[in-house]
Image 1: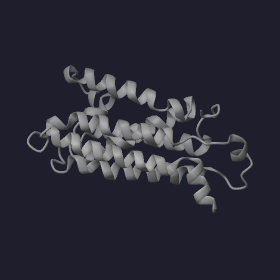
Image 2: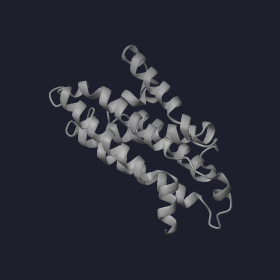
Image 3: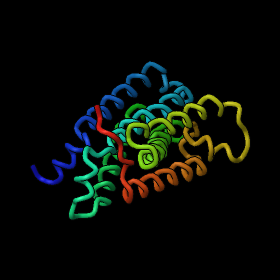
Amino acid sequence: MTGPLLYARSRAVPLTLTALIGTAGFAVWAAGQLDGYLDPFRRVPIVALAPLLASAVIGAGLHGDSEELDRTAVRPWWPRRLVHLGALTALAAASLTLAVLGHAETFGPPAVIRNTLGCTGFSATAAVLLGARLSWLPAFGYVSAVYLASSAARGRGVTVWAWPVQPGAQTGAWAAALSLFALGTALYAVCGARPEGPRG
């Protein structure tokens, strides 16, 4: 096996790709059940939760099977990690937009792309700090809390802290999501996921 194939196998990339395709298919089906084409505001659950599920899948795939082998590599790991995270994020963002085509100015593709970037950055940061197994947990807690609490929230800061449930064009929401993605990508590229015990 060549280097890229070994890397993909050790990071469970085929399983991650299958799970991302399944997540996108579920999002398309769920969006159809919500009649989101009639009322874009009915898409908020899809716009907030589908990227969260995709980021959980990506975060779980950021583990390495052997920390000892990783440490003995001749070439630096950060380019591989950067390509790995970037490619999975791009695939997730592109496939999830199929669930919300149209109404780009409200809860359409821009909002899904933004949320995929933000949630993936959240999960990548958590993978570095907590490990890949638990990388989904902080993003899940935050996005769930925002989804439940943001409907009554008002004020200038809402677009920043409630970025997962904002329409696509909100500048503050984009700034928050892009900052999270940049932080998570940089941390993961440099440090990798936190080492864990053997997977059972």
